Image (cartoon, rainbow, N blue to C red; front, side, top):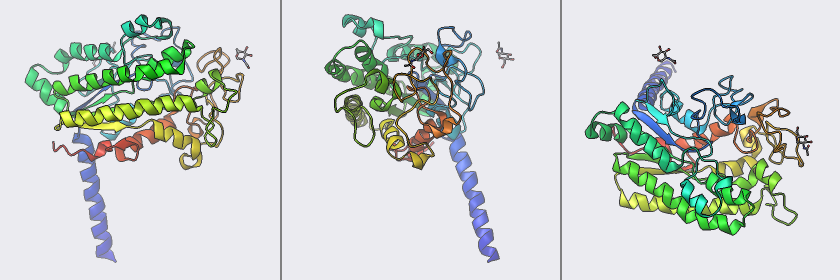
Length: 372
Ligand SMILES: *[C@@H]1O[C@H](CO)[C@@H](O)[C@H](O)[C@H]1NC(C)=O
Ligand SMILES: *[C@@H]1O[C@H](CO)[C@@H](O)[C@H](O)[C@H]1NC(C)=O
């Protein structure tokens, strides 16, 4: 018995050393682009603006203990990924006094994949609230470069040892026609433009030396309390098991399929790059269908933080989370929807795990083939 125990202890010891060094040395830095799913405070670097409900208590209550500008009660997927690789949480790229050598997070709440001119041309500028589209964020990245690497070769080397996460993008693009009361068809006609914009951003990063990239798809918004409340349907538009609004999930599904096709094309064009498709859609549907597997309450989608509204979803547009009259549920970890739009730290934790080790990413981020 004894030698066996010794051997297994020794193996355990070895594997923990191995895991640790693997985790600590895998990436030199992480660079993230995105919207409110990954914004870590870019709107709050000069203090919390009074208009921003998502930067008020009880946002941040579970992990940080105060609002950080993250649209959740705690960490986002990007935070869990940074921690999994032994990196510090990425600072918002607009932070005044931060060091960006281990990475930067360019994500900003409201961001779209398409530039403002696209929405203006369609009379949709009122339903876009864009402080930095995807390609604006790429420009910010460009402007930051001199502070993180000092020659084209050095930059290329650094980016080749870094992880780039491009998204999620698209949610706010599609919300624009939908919240303007336009037909679902109009949102569908935008999909090729949105996917092309994401794809060209990935290409620009690869051309600058990026080798490891993650491209996330969009949420099944038909399961979100905000959509269920604002687009309440009298028709038979609900999934029989999930209770989600079908046509919004179809939109997300079509976007995600086209995005995956674009990812496959990019892999063919750039065989040296490793491009992961990361799935936000499947885990949220799993939270709906099998909440017990994640420790969530079984119920129709209900915002943890909010106020009673016209329906059972605990979403009220005039008393959103962070507004007076709204409050958080007792146990956010038992809910996947935090504020009716964004997810709880608990939900983001499960998604991050699924992206890192499977099954919610193709291929899982941890199965990198790149020897560093
Ligand atoms: C800026 O960074 C320096 C060094 O880390 C620190 O000592 C200082 O307090 C920081 N200033 C602000 C305003 O955060
Ligand atoms: C939504 O919240 C507002 C402000 O607290 C409140 O006056 C209103 O009654 C709420 N709506 C419903 C349907 O409960």
